[in-house]
Amino acid sequence: MVLAISSYLVCPVIAAVVALFLARSAKRSIRRSNGMRTGEGAATAATALALLNIVIFVVASAALITYRDSVSDWFNDLIDRRPVSELTAGDCFNDATFATSNTEVTDVQILSCNDAHEAEAFLTGELPDGLDTPFPGTAAVADTVSEQCFAGFEDYVGATYDDSIYSFASLAPGRDDWEDGERWFVCALVPKALDDSVGSARGTGR
Image 1 (cartoon, rainbow, N blue to C red):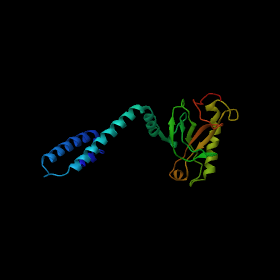
Image 2: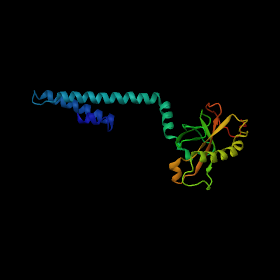
Image 3: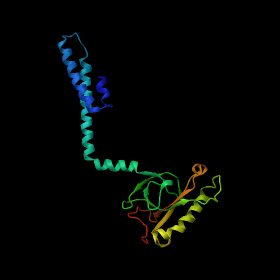
């Protein structure tokens, strides 16, 4: 019985097969004992648990084979994440929580720019040393980053801000990260229509 239960945790199929064999042997021994031995109910329960384990394993394996592409996509989405502070120009991503002028610092899902994506990093760097410590405030940081973003926008896109289909959002450290000495910033392109993009905006003139 213990082996049948443990088969759900350790070496499921092997343990389940061994549990089946032992349960069958136990039942034979009990029946041959002419009532001297008990425990047939436990042996039956162990058999049922072991069989259920095998059925679950077979069904799960079949589902994994059938839906392996979807599982692979889910797993890749799960692991292909990066802190915002580690983004570089040309990275396309999802899952940043954009506000009007800046975003909360978070991890984002990195995507190929050929896939539909919410944003594309076009400029990254370090904020000027002149910004005060302690934290000067979200608005002050956002204004400084926006100046950098405006300056680098046309060089990356190949069109002025007014003529482009893109707007931008700035990403920078929050108070806690600022107090820890972080001064990174990221400028990210976001379509003015707030639709997902497909393809990189670099040098498109759009």
